[in-house]
Image (cartoon, rainbow, N blue to C red):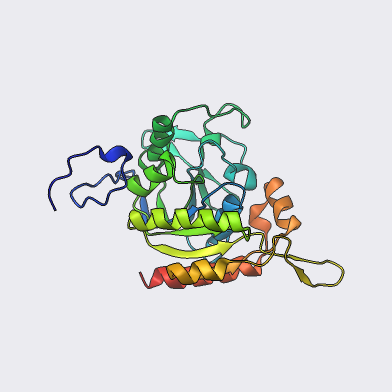
Length: 274
């Protein structure tokens, strides 16, 4: 292929002549990097990120979360992290949860958790890059990147700057969400990043009285999308107030979720075949 002649910083063309990948902090070693993406907000992408990190941590892996959702960071709250990030001569030190999960989020750098991040796209993208290049992650087996929704500047920066081994797409059963999921899938395909599977969140709820499953958003269309794009359905997560309550209380590590355990087992198997 001939040399690239256009501005690569805002382009999704697959030019073999370029490499925009940022160099990982020299005091870090990350074996696998998994992006958690969604076509729109509000589908539970962050809770899926948290659950997967917890499940892999329980398997004995050194696990980390890079919170790339700069304008809507929620990972520190889910794990009850209140202290701010510290620094050393080697770089920025991530926060560490009670069970040993390493976390870096913009909320660990703000004076107050409720301070809004009013930054333009290039600054947001630069912050994500710094979380990769300037944070002393140490040895990590699995890093989960909680990406912002959509297909804008920051998701594009993650795809181009961080060497993703694959992504997981989070969706919910509504028709509108299913349509937008296809945009996220197509973006990953354009960026040549493997799609490891799909997680459908808020798929159903179980009646506490009769034990029956109910589907408040109607029949899921996930099978159709998965079949069309050859995607693996990792799991369907129910609406579970207990999970939301645990994350609100900063106790994500206390969640016991068989569906998430199944998803982590499938994901572990898929990654092992890469």
